[in-house]
Image 1 (cartoon, rainbow, N blue to C red):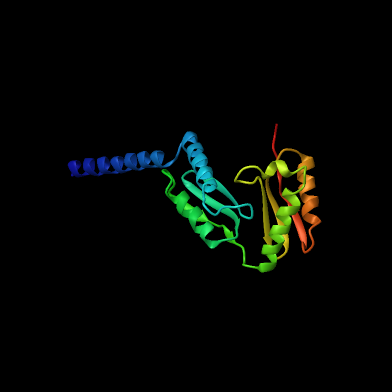
Image 2: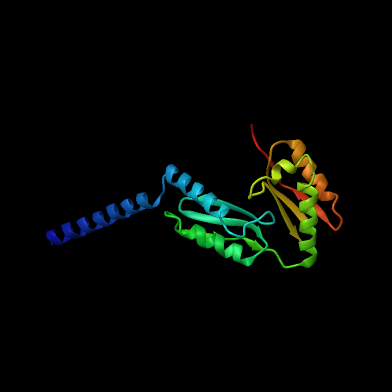
Amino acid sequence: MKRAMILVVVAVLSLYIFGVAQDTQREPSARGQERITREVRHELLMLPYFGVFDYIAFKVNGDDVALLGQVVRPTTKSDAENAVKHIEGVEKVDNQIEVLPPSSMDDQLRLRLFRAIYGDPALQKYDLGVQKPIRIIVKSGRVTLEGVVDNDADKNLAGLRANGVSGVFSVTNNLQVQKS
């Protein structure tokens, strides 16, 4: 009887210790979460069809990653999830990326907005490189500007240029100003 009681106590203690050890291994360190954040950002920027008319944001919470934003192609949504899923340390990917509805009117509007914003002499500096810092999201004639610019003047100018394009119903300027 006494021996059975000791075995039960040892079994309970070992399960408790094993469970605590598993929980501490599962909870990533700040350094691990920073590494996951860096790798997710890199993988998303390397997507083959990720362009100026797509916007993808993400949140890292431990070993879970939530993908947010809007994209023009359904393949970009699935490519983003597949790229992030294979990062070491990522256990779960919550893909909340919205695929924008196909529309020839929105496609024409995207091109006019691109020319209006990136064609402005004061904003041409943002047209360098493959990944454009000003993202132009168009959904049913409603425009959202996402990304990062150098100063408030550039943010306001991009918003004004977008508002000046015919066919635009509204403009939401979510551009962030880079901190010095």
